[in-house]
Image 1 (tube, one colour):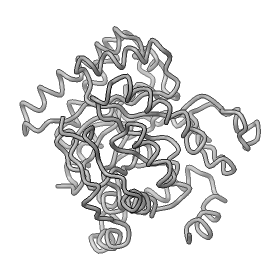
Image 2 (image 1 turned 90 degrees about the vertical axis):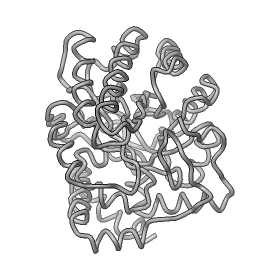
Image 3 (image 1 turned 135 degrees about the horizontal axis):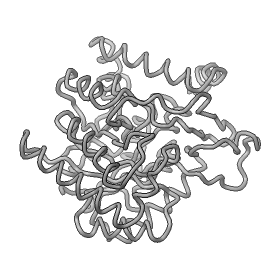
Length: 362
């Protein structure tokens, strides 16, 4: 309540990206100070044995994680691991550093509890990010890397797939799994991977690279999880379901941001007209429908991470009941503040949610 009543109005009076950098910078500092990390854990972490589950051979203390996009460069992982999240996804990470699109590139929709962004996947590049994670040492919770092709790379499907493979191979030793981002609205040419042949080539090459890296390293399985756009068409959906059925992927993140602008939004037309992906509350119904669709189409055989418009226990419970095994927050975290994962986990426990048979070791 303190965040929503006092701190959020102050933060929302400043440019969104500047506030984001301030938040991540503060958590980066906290990550370097063990006493501060301890205080974060004492205040924000939650233990709920009833909610624990094992998926992909990884232990999750509850279902609520942090989506990619918040800690793009993996600078604040130690602090985030102590803020109540069951797992953290960093990135998106590309093979070389990228500055992203020109600013402004984030737009708030406070009346709709949403954001529009066209960041363009800025990041420090896989070499810097992998080295940073290697220096961080052991982690108490699972860490995933969201990997993407270099934003302005053009050429054949084979060339773009090779770029993905370069990123996966470099970061594999320092993460617990991957989300493969072929659905960011702000990155050109990703749409090509929605077609069956291109998708199977990409996933096949990534799976082979993953298996080689695991065999040459510690032997520990890393799941390959596809991050799906809410705007997929029937052909793309069919290709994803086929890939899941044939073991080409180990899980799904549903969903990324949407280029849709649902009717009835309160934001002014000039904001709604901004190019980019919409997230937050307006995305929830769309993402929830995709979770139901893919859970039914895959008959619950593939673990799903539900994301989109989750700002409390109601939205989380809806995702889990629709077929997700885990959920992620980001825009809701911006609007609700740092206690959100703790409040959701406690709410799920108090309302009787428990993992089901679909939460299993893969």
